[in-house]
Picture 1: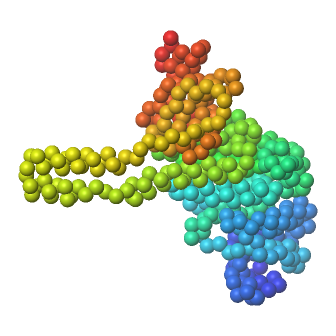
Picture 2: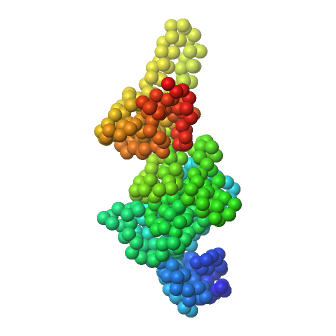
Length: 427
């Protein structure tokens, strides 16, 4: 451990901030530029361990390559008495783990935090890096509201084939042999828990577990022991978000469910798509309130004052008509927008209760009917995690009435967030 006043080149140690498996972190002063920085030092006894040293060097390379506002910025690297160190920006604030100690975040705050994490993660993936240890402890929220991803200490550099992220990525460095489990229990992906190759979709799974916890205040796969937790990650589904946090909008729940799919191929093909979906949820949620605030209120006080002053039946009727006209004038004329460009048959379509999404059933390219979700401002559709079905209706509580079975003649109910349909009427 370094004492205050110790020098690492031009850096003067001020105080110890914290310590962990990957080293000790100090607050220090850059005497050349006159700024405070954070220095992570790998202790001497660990420097002799080739694996730890390699992983530490990977962290330095990873962070240096990732110039993004939602990723910790690296300033410098060096060696002090045979121990390597990295110099990064000094952050003021708290980790996401600290914020979650008091329970779930407000839904808007959780979504905004998730958007920033997803953008940082997408930037890392676009450079070919997989974090592999994404967890609340490695997410930091500054006092200015900026969210940053920390600790690419076990990041793995991969090469994307033909510029495509995902399971097709080919490992070229980072050298963790198959069968070796790295990461943190509770936030590992199923493939990590089984010692398989962990690529971009693995980070998406960890991200989904974090977002689940931000929205519900509960860990998605928490069990009594590490072994049971790993088993749950591989085999079990988490409790539906709607059961723990009914106020969470269905599109946010769908994003979590897609990220937490056991099969990596069922997650997002690109983390940028994940970030865009989350951003749409955030932006759509803000639109109704913004529109209401921007809409000019009709001059009801003037109208009521006129009614009281004149007291004439004919004038009252005229003013009531004027009020009705004002209300009608507030309503925009209907517009039409094409929501899909696929070929097939659409049997029904309904808006969700909040009006931000459209649920419809369709049979594409001669295949059976399935349920899909889309948004008016986007032609992209997402298939819902439900069995073959035709949509009948959507309730104000967010339940879908669907037709299932032979000829889709059996009426069933199912939640917007997924689950098993409950038969109501069988014809």
